[in-house]
Length: 388
Image 1: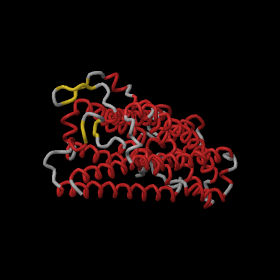
Image 2: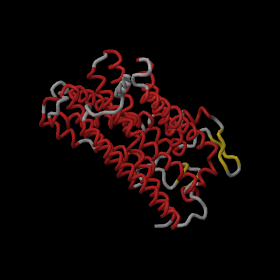
Image 3: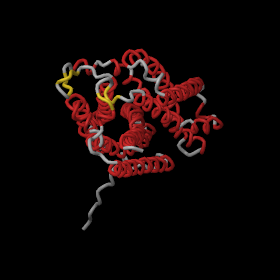
Image 4: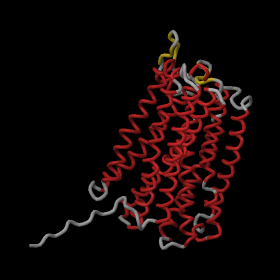
């Protein structure tokens, strides 16, 4: 493979691996916030254990996922300096805002939530997890602003051999953003709903002692998956209008994009049908053990659909890095050799693959242990009483 193809493949693989962390983060954050709000309102031990169990899974996924985002940032400077030179003044602004939100605001509020158990006032502690959710969604917003600029460079004008930001409002109201953002957020809800549902099905099928806890979380997962699938399919089809207005041949003349889109739509409708059937029997689903292996088997599908959607969106823009302004071949770093890109490819993909495997193994370990062995939110040991 030549340098350009290697660089494209590197970004595609690392981007896909990173996105697996992102969609689970976006899906679990509001669910954990709702669980914690319910616990603060009721004071129920069941709600507390539910919050701590799913909260630890969320924290594990976030901690490992944020490292994969750093790898993505490195590639803009190492492999795609032509993009940063030509459009850095426009493209870099939303990326910088996303970095500030994700690395400063979101991580700060998450730290307050993690270490605030039994220390912060009840409702202030609840507010911190809601701020984590809001900043996670704000982070997704700025990433989609940057990506939508690549799809349709709204708000920018040419100034010699670079692009300058001319209209910040046009950047934020980009037609490529309007339906794509809620589509991504609802994809996160779909992933979160199916993960909560499948983990609950695993414990219910094994008849672990926490039947009441996982019955409640299964019903919550079913309703979340139902809302998520209905929204993700609706906003997905709603994108065709804005997309065709900007990139009329996005899928028709791009075999990879067309194939990814076709499989994504097929999986999306399958998940939508499954969620619809499950929400009809939501009252009895926790008791039907024969249903639980089928629910568990569905778990990889929303992740696969999310990655296929990303491939369709990005591959359909080729050969343009910035649509109708900058080609991918002109965005690659000058002088980059096959040896250099191969070395970084092995390093980046190796690191992200290890993180993905570590994330999976840690989450599986937490799931198998169940809510009775969760460190998050555990009450501190009492101070020893000294006697003389």
